[in-house]
Amino acid sequence: MCQLQNPTILLFFKAASLLFPLSRFETRIFLPTFASPPSPSLRGRVGERPMKIHIFNPEHDLALASNLDNFTAPHAGRDLRHDLGFLPAIWAGRGERVLVDNREAAEYAYSKLGLPMRGVFITRHEFWNLGQSPLMTVEPWGWDRAIRKELLRYRGRADRLPDDTYLNIVRQSSHRSWAAEHLLRRLRQLPGTVGEAETAHSLAEIRRFLSVRHRIVLKAPWSSSGRGVRYISDDPDSSSTLTPQLEGWVEHTLRRQGAILMEPYYNKVMDFGMEWESDGQGDIRYCGLSLFNTVKGAYTGNILADEEEKEQRVAQFISPVLLSDVRQRIKELLTVSLVKFYHGPFGIDMMIVSQDGKLLLHPCVELNLRMTMGHVALRLREVATKPWNTMRVNYKNGKYCLEMK
Image 1: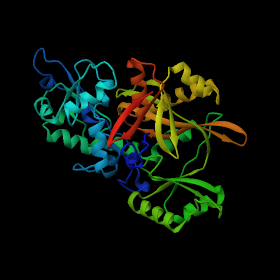
Image 2: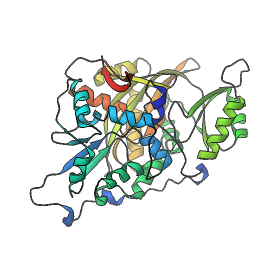
Image 3: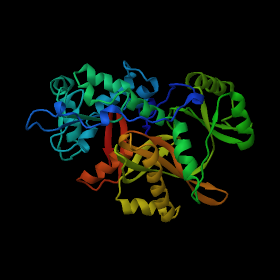
């Protein structure tokens, strides 16, 4: 979901690359071995308490795209993780750990928020001493091969971390085509909705789609609503025509990722999303709405408000009944296709568009199988000690910071 105002960090919340061409994209789902209850031999000593460790790894999408164990994030991504590593302390329970690069820096940054502190910051050195606990559970921003490798490097127990099968599920299901096929196509059956996505494997296919639609949006299969997105028009007077430079981007993306998703351009009225959490056993919990702002596809912040107020804002444009129907349909669809195997938070971005004099709902712009800034806004609203109205991530004086007003 999230790109920050600074364009250098767009891809650290949503980046993309290719595991295999779209034509070979498989949607078979396998039960991850780590989801099974631990055997008696792993239950720990009598009286030993479960230990949960939270990690903010915003480079997740880049790592997911690379699909490498030994992935090194670019400098800006490492800075983002260092400066905002304290974020999970907002939702960490009493006594739960939050893994950070620097404890003192995290404590100082978090103290500036004026929020209650229930968790405990730990460094990698301290994780070294804790990672062998048979009751350890880890909750990162998102699961990928790189974060698993990092934890194993610091003596995390392999039997307490996800296996390759589970990580492949996350990666495959994060492909834009998965959401287009399993969510958007089915949600479009509801009246009052709009949305279309087609797959191109060549520049010729894109040209044909453009000749019919006139204004289109191209999206790399693993990307966000910023760096991996291009807007194109067939109007020769437009500044977004299919230039040689843009053709180069298309060819490069096709070589690297095997496909490009094509969508009609929509006249957007409002961005928002639905935030969820899956227990990995077949049940998902609706957490709430996320109302966020973007400028030219770049995330600029979230609205902090109670659910009633957020629903009223959305209801200015679409029927509350439609919103409820979409929410219920998502739960039905994902209970069958995904949530029995995925454990953790996820979000579905949506938008309200104006088309032919009507306001319609695009029910699935993208699916994020990870923590999102929408989740952060929801948790922040629960623990806030001040009447904040907005939340945003800014870059000031060489550091990233979380700001509320």
